[in-house]
Image (cartoon, rainbow, N blue to C red; front, side):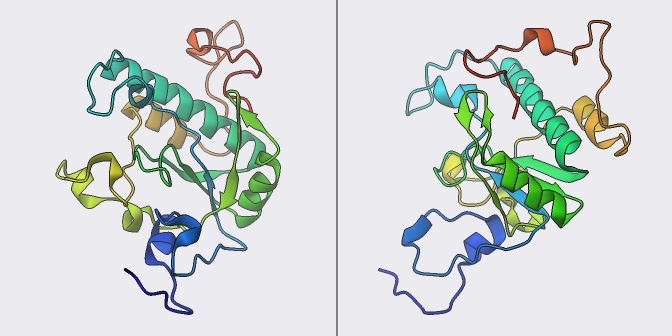
Length: 212
């Protein structure tokens, strides 16, 4: 049993912006008052995780379908946040299964002011039928937050690892999003005026899909 130490910071919260002990942690979670990075808690929902049993069987969603679903999600969130709040340096999505990390979306803006405004406004918004929970995050260097074993395909803890398992986007989407400058934030539109793949996206009955 761990003994609380007064004044000692939680290294997991400092590196990852999340801790599996939550409010019960015996160490300090010093939430930043300013940061370039925000976290949107539990925003991404992997369809494979919701379509499988505890042992991982009976999954009816193919890897190709999951990647397309994820790319659509990533593009929608990245594009709208950058258009509304400012230039994004980096965005990462956790594919972990632990409650404190599952579906977390980390967005690092170029300016701290943009991150602060995004948090203030996003906490009053909905996304795909669910309330958005946003907060400033202490994470600035994702290399320190990531599970190196996962990146090498060697993590034995699976989705319940306490370090970030970041889900990659497709190469084409990465070039599209990170290759354009801040003056050219909107993706190319079709002759109908919609973003590519827009017509294939499912709509939420209560909220437009992917709109904050």
